[in-house]
Amino acid sequence: MNYLHSLHTDIRQPERFTYPFCYEPHPLCLLAAEEVKKELGQMTLTEGKMFGVLVVDTSEGLGFLAAYSGLLEGRNDWPYFVPPVYDAQQPDGYFKTREREISLTTHLSPLTTKKMSQELQVWLFHQYQLLNARGEKRDLVEIWQDYHNSASIRHRFPLPPGGTGDCCAPKLLQYAYSQRLKPVCMAEFWWGASPKSEIRHHGEFYPACRGKCKPVLTWMLQGLDVDPDPETTEGSHLVPETVWEDEAMAVLNKPAGMLSVPGKIGRYSVATWAEERWPEAMIAHRLDMWTSGMILVAKAKETYLSLQEQFANQTIKKKYLAIVEGIPEKEHGVIDLPLLSDPMNRPRQMVDYERGKRAITEYRLLHHTQDGKSLLALWPHTGRTHQLRMHCAHQDGLGCPILGDELYGRKADRLYLQAQAISFVHPTTGKRLHFELPYPFNQIIPFQYQY
Image (tube, rainbow, N blue to C red; front, side):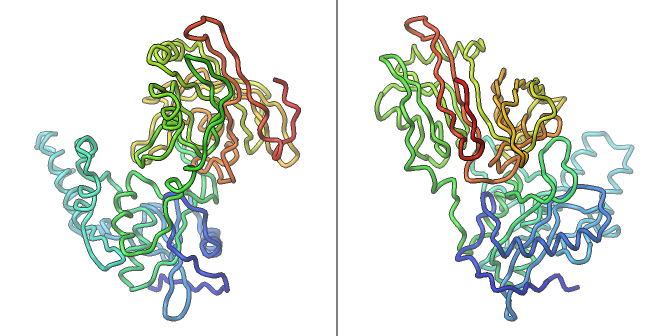
């Protein structure tokens, strides 16, 4: 079966291959994706699914490969799409045969049955012999254990989670390498209804998942000239603005794109900037990297502890402004959706009504435009990771993702979310202070904001 599809275009190739965890789809990928979407339009699908395209260079010119993550309608043998790295679905194959045998062993203890299932899963992982651009080959267990050199992560996840190696990107690269096709660029998009726990928008592009795919793709991309991670190359020139300060603390305005504290990659942050000026400085709370606005800095431990107590008692009040895509049904309301971190795709969050932590956000619609954008005021009553972003975007919340939210919506020049105002009790004087920034989004929604 021919899985290579022609791509007739004068669009120039990118200089380097796509960094799959943070990217803007290349025009070649957009062109290939449109062809895949035409194919999908002729299929009767009942589930939402991630699809991927890989543009390749051949001796006859450019072409592209297409893939879907996992199974599609219970099958992994759909024509047009590349085959899996390893086909575990053959009814008479060892995996399915052994799986049936284990399910029929009712005379054995549950512990023994569980052990047999785990051994079968390990056997399956060893069958995934993954190539990289150098032509080297390793199995999933080797790749996983070499990548996770942290003892704590190895303890929690000694083996890959089920489904590792079955996402779009590994399938596409494996087939390209096996056929000696040169990868040019890659992109993935969601097609169909969004799952209930996550946020996926029909037709939108998304980065590869980090939990399952980061170890695998780190191996498979070796030998390719790959774009640098933009999150490690942007933002080092940014500095916060001092809104107010005294001997005990400072109120800063963090720009979008700057970290609050150093990350794993040791980037310049608000914390490092503050420590350069006040040796004992401590950040009292954090903002997401792409969120701008108010952040409090304590210049000594006593001040820090006082602010932390106020956060714990929920006496520090914060207000955010956001531009969202869409218009909420109600002008004012409260969103109450429990959130849980997705362990296999950090830093993404999920809505989980059984295990999630309660998260509450009050909102008010301030203005909306004829092209369907809205300006909201948001008051978080809890402080969960990505709370405002999830509550705006999720279908059980507002269903209106924040403009520029590439995790839960669509990429733009920035995330249009700002920590606009904050009020707290000064740790030393006992006076309640309130600070508010100028309205920042006039270029998108002109508005006479009332302070």
